Image (cartoon, rainbow, N blue to C red; front, side):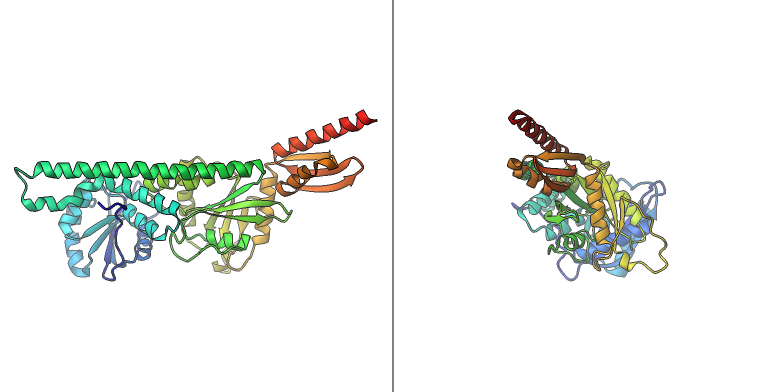
Length: 432
């Protein structure tokens, strides 16, 4: 095992992938056809060409073959017909299932988790992103180490071969566990830095808005359109992984922080959720979530369910939220009526349609979390007035005793304003 985590190499042009999945009648998620179509998009994103697919209707995978033994044997004929050299399974495989299929088909066998980890490894640009992907890869490969040491079987087994093999395997397991511990420690440093930055924002009463949603729903494009930024965005799955934060000015003049986060996907590997937890802490700390939905996708309801499942796992499932139906420019003219709601917006991040309405709804949603304020702040406390101006939705009027600040503010600064107003009145009364 190299110092860096092993990644699956799908860069060669002759990677011909065949996809398989299960149609489980008890599974209430997407139909298998839709899931395999998404798996095909993932495989193509990783650089493979998809030459075919198959599924079997059964309640749960076979513990050895994934498919039933008979249907798994038919894959040998599928391989001869389509000449595939990579089998990709639409679920996470147990190590013994992977070994059985590799032995049966004499080709590389990947599962959905390995494929997603590979894509993440390609797209992570920052040190933090690479650390998170490496952690996910290490934890994924640890229980599968036995299959990486097939060279030991060349000695024929028996006396004189068991000890060295076991010793080498245990050595590698120890090295990987040590590497996992090191990467986790580095990610913990990242988490602490993020927590420090968040406390700094809290001290300045800066509200945060986090973009969440299914991969390729248009989060990065929306961030660019809303905040006039130039975050990388492309029409592909997991185009961006590294967290991005930009400043957004609302119609009231209030400035907030908008954060883009990694996209979610159906059957997102648990190891990846855990690895990206440091980044996804931004979601838990946010004052408001913008759930970006690809309104042009026929299965957007299923995508929303997948997003909700990850948010629940993060402990952010009940956070205040605006659902943003993006890509409305791709909808047909007869798509139907768009129900109006304070917590629903219909936009096109590409054309700009609906973005002004979304800005107002963000301002309204954040204002609902603040408290009403009406206080006269002494002129000597001009810095407090400036903080109120930048952190809330207020109006100012100049009076004899100071600046009257009226509107809505975060509770912490509102209490400071009222206290400053009371102190100012006391000093005025004392001087009189």
